[in-house]
Image (cartoon, rainbow, N blue to C red; front, side):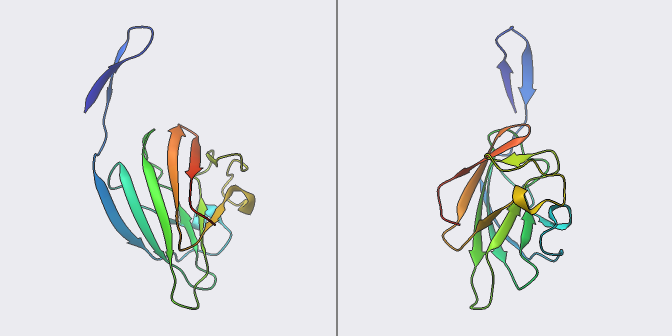
Length: 134
């Protein structure tokens, strides 16, 4: 817990979960539907998600309870037949300059391969992709 003071002098308490956590995610929702994607759990300020994909099951959803400043690293675990993970923001959020998610629009998502990509939440509705290759 941290207390910060905004430019107007109002103190506000900020809660965060420090550290790094590595989680494995196996998507099970229908491909191309962000609202049915498998959520990546928010475990810490930096969550590393290792995504095991299969044909028709490669959609993951960024954590809906992420705080501004949190980061999620996403990597696809390749098994020879897997497909790249497709990362969706939550409804009302966007990744970079992609479309804002309405829960069913594929153009709001970004494909991520085994080289990975980091997504940082920079506002209440915006994630920014950092590095990696899709």
